[in-house]
Image 1 (cartoon, rainbow, N blue to C red):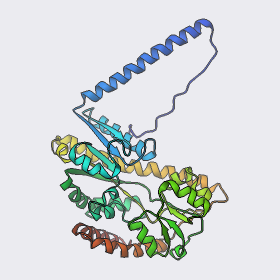
Image 2: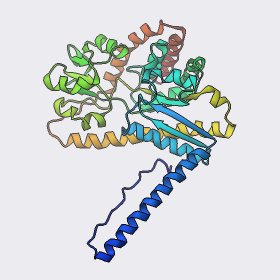
Image 3: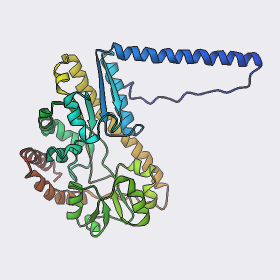
Image 4: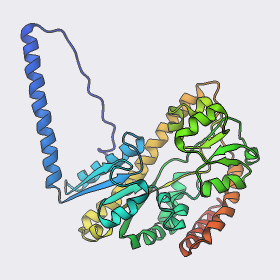
Length: 364
């Protein structure tokens, strides 16, 4: 996994030099600049020399862990393909809005995307269910198991194909943590809690569980928690919440999460896919599976480090729901799943497949 390995920071040594040594240093710096420029030109030539040059848009801003991991995936594809494929990874909104990448990939404006299917819920409610079936998964490998052996992959591939898109495969991240300024130790403790949640399925499920959901943009979460406008918030993974200082103003985070575990859709323009030789199709398929594992463990490591940091703060108490409480929440969520299942043929098929999978593994 050479492309996935961490790259060590260069060590720069600074020392006093005589006039002659300073002259030599200037010359060395100049030749270094020339060498760097040559490297850039060589890289550009390599991209131009690739048989396939693609642009994939993601759902993260540049620099986020997810974005960095997706760049590593693109580099790995280049290596595995022997330089025949070159993929440029762009951040959210770089070419089209995040809600439009499906159409853009189908039209060839983008060659592919790595994103959350929930963004396309306006096209078919099945995208919302497949993108983030709230309360269904406590671990990313449960979701990936369903995609691999429970019929999830086939259903999602069928869903996107009419848009001119080929579904290469799925990835996932860690369950999102719940930020809380009050202790929420059981499902019953959700009653009356003013909880920030995005509109849609998650909003409705928390309402059914007894909470009082409030729709707020992500940019207002910290301030709302700090001022007591809301008691808790559905935001993102633990590591990011910790880095943003969320746990300092809301010191009862729920982790591991129980409510939200989004799918990552990795897809490509279907015409491009159909025109690829079989060996490159196999490389892309295998690379997505590797990326999925690497991404999960990368986020898991970040979460673990953040949890250690949080535990060192005596003012923060991390709450971990029992399996019984998670099952209670999942049963409440299932009522809303049933409401969504009736919205289209695909949502019903997806609901049937998921409930069969969860029931067969004593998760429902």
